Image 1 (cartoon, rainbow, N blue to C red):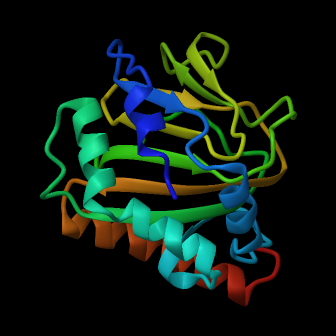
Image 2 (image 1 turned 180 degrees about the vertical axis):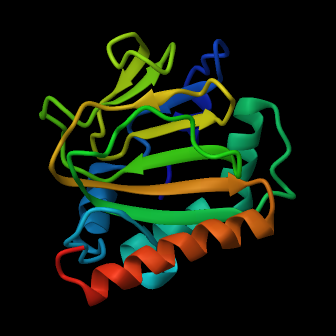
Length: 205
């Protein structure tokens, strides 16, 4: 389902931190099927994949993400070994105004990938920006529209600054992170599970 060649051909920016973006990672047919099978998420926030129900097309995509072939492709892009790094998969369906604030990702994350599952993105906000510094969202190295089938990725570093302009509404993606350890992954998943539980209990959360 994933076009691994599209990822292999994407150019990696090495400085000031390592990142790349690849479009056309999913065909139009597969993207439509995955969008139809996307979990019914009505609230903002990040949800563990294990807490959600979804259809067979998205399940097939997850199999590709968990495959050794995909791991090898990403490891080769950055020249790192991911074989001892556990993979965490989470899902977002909606963005809220506070999302997109500049950050680097936590030290628990070794590599971050975002696979967008939207239609063609014509909105002004919500475009991922790889930044030169932590203070200016307009001073960016690259801007990635979250159009369906686009994969954005970076090797987490102390200066892997990224963010996006505010956007409120549907903004779908799978996020998958190779984590520094199983302990770190369970800690992150526990936090997301707790948040997901609160959202189910409290309709205003």
